[in-house]
Length: 439
Ligand SMILES: CC(=O)N[C@H]1[C@@H](OP(=O)(O)OP(=O)(O)OC[C@H]2O[C@@H](n3ccc(=O)[nH]c3=O)[C@H](O)[C@@H]2O)O[C@H](CO)[C@@H](O)[C@@H]1O
Ligand SMILES: C=C(OP(=O)(O)O)C(=O)O
Image (cartoon, rainbow, N blue to C red):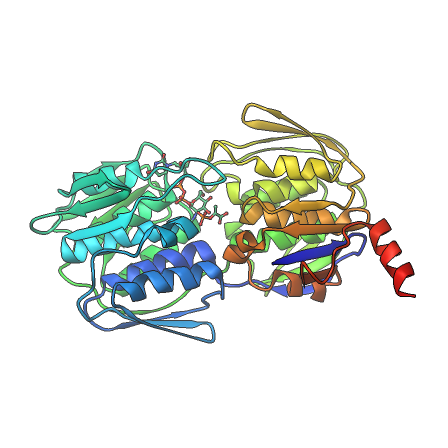
């Protein structure tokens, strides 16, 4: 089993290049199977475990998929199976449910293992299913599966989402693209990844307007075709490196980062005293001598992203004063608090908020990545902690970050990915002891 070991105290400087967005590429690859003619060529695909999983899912259904360099090519023109692979895949990655909309619209049937709960909350898919029902589908849930079917074509419908769910907006938008007539999604999610998916669907021949606003209008068409598309940069990977620059008081150019996608984070970082500059190729972040405390509440886009909540907590731990971070998107996304405490963090959970007392002298410790962003946040804390931090459960981090160790090392961090058996030390003292033994 592999771990990441980081020794704190190095300032990060230089340039880091941001990959294509995980949360954009997964729905785009899922959408590619809606094309009954032509192939799709998708560029800037990040080499993530989640990308391998979604590729496996659509391969299992009979799509031909190749992944060369950063380009995925999908040929879904052969008849597809409408039953997605077993729970194993949905357990690994909830985005597997995004094949429901395309299959239902193209074949009038889809069956997928029902996703279970996960470390950040229960994450139901009721809003996806209500949307399909409004378009005329029958929904059957039983024996751990969800099955959706319709006799003829789906028909266009007006769908109001109780909350602006990203996945529900995507699934409904894909299904509506091939439905008969006009659909309207109200209270739709406005994330940049929704816009990216709509742009790809429109290149395939769909007629979607309003993506990125709370009302999306979709005029259904009879057929969709493969198309070429380039995935937008990953705003959460960018945000993670922005925090890395700030927390180490470094100076880093985050290449490809899109200011427009990062407004909420930038404004909070500026409030904390961080300098954030828009440059031609991306965003430069310069860490201040003193970080100031602030309050943050996670919200659907354009609010502060829940996927940056744990990384922001790392930064708050270094800020002077009391910060409050409130999670409103997921009901259980504070698993990292216990891990931060192992590093000497002073954190108090009060309902959906965490009170952060800073600045604190973080101490290296063995900590587990409880989800992918928590894993990244623990590395960030490790960058400024005294001594060695060992981060375990790396499979979470690998779902969402390409070469994270190498990228941090290139910026000057003392960080290494090791086989657990090779290096048993976790603390400075242990390390020193080990060196004495060696000499
Ligand atoms: C692959 C992907 O793009 N993942 C992102 C996506 O997840 P995902 O699409 O799963 O997130 P949603 O926006 O759907 O979830 C937001 C909230 O709505 C609730 N909900 C959602 C659907 C539903 O049918 N019923 C329901 O109650 C969820 O439990 C959660 O509390 O958006 C989240 C919120 O920005 C991000 O954290 C994830 O990184
Ligand atoms: C929660 C996340 O992803 P997913 O929805 O794929 O679990 C994330 O990217 O932070």
